[in-house]
Image (tube, rainbow, N blue to C red; front, top):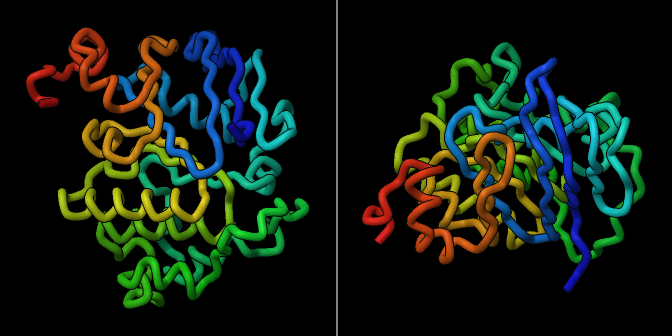
Length: 252
């Protein structure tokens, strides 16, 4: 088995005096999707922020590829090959779709890292992103703030892809979307995995997460209370009920 692309080892993350992540560990390989599930306030977004360097852990280790992320600022972590699709999309509403997409290719944002050496991985460029999201091509000169919620989510994902990341951090990508658009996000994640991207996914939509994930983690009060594949979680009545508020009958 190949070595992990991302390894999170016993991290402890705080917001001020609030102890949020209390010894969290996981591993994610190239071309895998790991879904982080849990009720609100359990630390899921904090895990994403810890990996991205936005809320660094006070102790523990995060290794990406073969290098520690300890002490690195968020821009350096992004340049190393990690992109984030944040909760709430966080697009620039006054910039056009084109300008939003081109931000990761600017001189300030551009990666200075050496190529990852994977000759088989397809690269993303402006034309490839618009092929993936044809609805953005139709709105290319419109300001981001004029887009629908679904279009803004596609823009947030497309912007992340323009950086050609090996790892994509996705925080609640289905939030506020219609069932039709949720299915579109599901298919996008599957295609990204097929192209070799690893995805660390935080998601409240249980069925979406279980339909795309290779491995599932359930986070409760800052600790993982379950780790396994989606099929195993579907049979874990206690975990579903106690930590996700889902009746096992609904999972049949």
